[in-house]
Image (cartoon, rainbow, N blue to C red; front, side, top):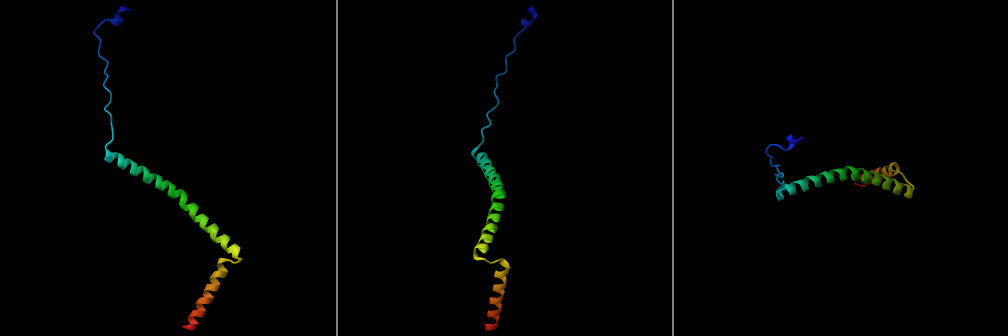
Length: 87
């Protein structure tokens, strides 16, 4: 039992790891990388929502006017044919 406390005591290494504080340039690069990743994620979410919203909006306008894209296209082709006859 007494042999536990025999011998010289070794000092406990109390060296703390060096603080790895980032430089301003490294902080700026990290912020830029995070911002780009956030913009990329936001883009993957918002762009499909915008496209679907535009589709629903155009469809709603056609329904409100009581027409369809095919009818509008036919009318535009008739106007084009009339304009070509004039010229």
